[in-house]
Image 1 (tube, helix red, strand yellow):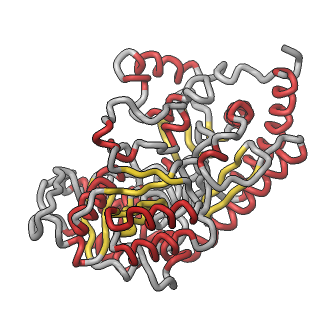
Image 2 (cartoon, one colour):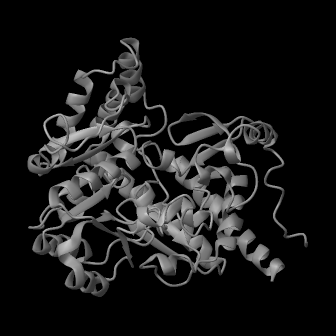
Image 3 (cartoon, one colour):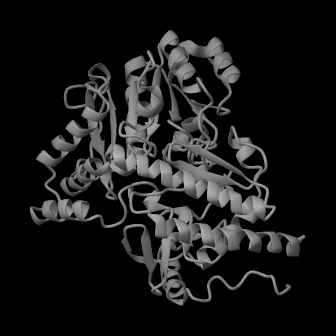
Length: 448
């Protein structure tokens, strides 16, 4: 190695290293969700102990500008006083009842007010559960079996959807997932994202057997890949013509990119709307909470008034509902304007730094979500996303981490800003990006 080699990024992470060694002896891989393990980028995952606004602090006392934001829910910033107060007040009355509560009703009303085409909503504890329930409803409503998804779109870890699922599966280089039987995946058809001809051909061949097509509002689990102009509208049109349901997975985009989610940003004026929506992340304000929503005709198939069973002890948990409601009430037009502007400045600034350093890349956006692909051409689908230089991303990730910027530890994830990212934090990130981009160039030269 020459004098331009990257420093030992983990030299000041001894506390995190100690905790990770303890965790690895009792938790598979030391983590409760795979991407957190730093497997694809190397090094020691940071163990965080507190967050305030846009800043998080690890067990070693080091501060970082956070561009993960718990993968979306920290839209107002960490430990926002109004969210903290709402959660603490709810918890003071009990953290759970296993019975209906007023908080879930208030949250349901808030969501339906924001997305007026919705008539019913059912709360669950995770996005995976929400998608599982949406698929079960679609099959019950249509009396069909086939589900269509798109390569690189992630819809949770339900067995039938871990086929070319993007996100953590792509990060770890797994082909799909062992433990998923042929029978469980037989009724799942995977098509390339942003490929209208493939979708049309499939419906021409077996449209009368398709129960539903599911897609992310904008793909954000293979990096940020927005749908091509008219692609989501085509899904809705084909589903309507062939009697299938259109499921829009807004677990990530819902109320993150607009006060009415991706639907409000891009589909509200479309004559054909999704039949079912799934939500998560923002609606729980950082607590485990998700939802499936849609028309009364479909949603009322759920028990206790219909035959489709779904249940959960902690579904609609009052603390999560209170935190989610407080978070949504903070999601005003002014907040979204701030998020859009911050994402624009940060995305352009990081891209400029990489370009000046001669690092091949492309910047992609979907609302205020953005990511950098270390690949010189724009990315339209999962196959193109996988061609990026993940080694270059790893170098950049650690160079930024060493300068106090916490990026998602995967080349296949979106970057997140919050209402707490202000001038100081933005300048911090852009300064770190300029130095980090130069280090990436040097590191790539050393390794060739």
